[in-house]
Length: 128
Image (cartoon, rainbow, N blue to C red; front, side, top):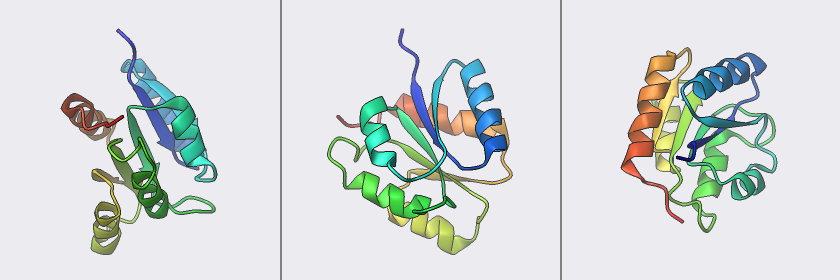
């Protein structure tokens, strides 16, 4: 059985290392993308099953990236969970309005992340 692939898009090295280790220990293959620049090309190349996408990124923010992802052929159904230190209503509403499937506020628990990942990978939302 092939491991499910997760793209982790976050510029915080501490979060990258912690989540990569925890998720790999849970049986996932994790591709870390430290910034939004070139994200769509990376996703087309690596074909992840799910994206964990930080809202605050250098260059292009995660909400704009999510919107761009939703307009990319073959990526429209890819589950996207936003990670955000800004758990205010506007950020959450904007994330969902521009295509995120869910969001997780920082700080977060690894149990919450695992539960949401499992939820979206089991539903098979991903399209072509």
